[in-house]
Image (cartoon, rainbow, N blue to C red):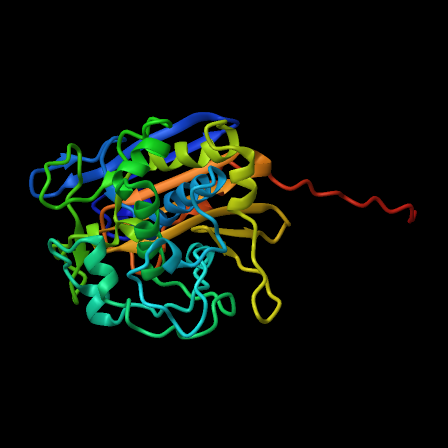
Length: 335
C-alpha cells in the first residue's frame, strides 16, 4: 500500500501462488475515486501487453492441435493479406520477428472507437517488411493483431470466443474478458492518468477491441496468478505446449530471443529462471512473474497509466522467494 500512495495510484490488486496454492489475493485502494468504490480482488483492470501471454498460449494450443503450422505463411491462412518482399511465416508473429513495422504515434494513441480487428490490420497490411523475418526481434502490436486474425480464420471463432473456450472457462478466470467500452462489465475499474502537473485525471477514452489479441484484455491479479500457476501445475495446458511456449529462436546475430510467445524468459543474478511480462496501457498496468523452480507466481494490476512498467513485481516476489544459501568459509589458520 505504501508503494501505491507514493506513486499516487488510485487502486490495484495483488496475488501470490506458492506451491500450487493461492496464499494471497487482495484489492487495495479505489476502483472509482469519484464514487469512492473500493477495489476488491474481483475488480477488473486493463493489463496491456500482458494480454500477449494469453494469446501466445492460445496460439501454441492451436499449433499442438494441428490447426496452425508455424512455418506456413500468413497468406496461406489469409489470402487477402498482401504478399511481401519476403516470405512471412506465422510463427514469426508470435516471436515479434516478422519485420512488420511498429505503430506510429497517431496509430498508437488512436481512441480506436468501434474499430474492428480487420480494420486495425488495414493500417499496415500494404506496408513492406522492415527486415527479413527471423532476423531481428522488435515488438509491435501489429504482430499479435495479425496473429489473432489468423487464428480467427482457421477456427471460425473470434479471439474472445477462443480465449473463453481454451483458457478462461477451463481455468475459471472469471475476471478476464475483452475490454469493450460500450458494454456493461461487472467490476470493471475506472481508468486514471496523471496530467502534466501530476494531478490525477480520468484517462482518455479508448476502445482496444481492434488490438484485443495484443493488449485488449481486462483482468486482475488473482486471474493472472491463476493463469501463471496453470503453466506450472495444470494439465489443461499440455507439456508439449509448455515446452514450445518458452523455446527461443536464434536470430541473425546468433543471439536467442528472450521474448517468446508473449513471455519474457530470463535468469536472475543468482541463476534462477523466471518468466512473465510487465506492461502499461492507458489507464492501467499489470505484471505477472513466475519462478518455476520455486513454484512461485506473483501478479499485480493497477488502474493508473503505467508508462514505464514500474510495478514493483520483483520486490514483491522477493518477499516470498527462498533466500540463496550463503556458505561461510572456515579458516584452518590458528592465531
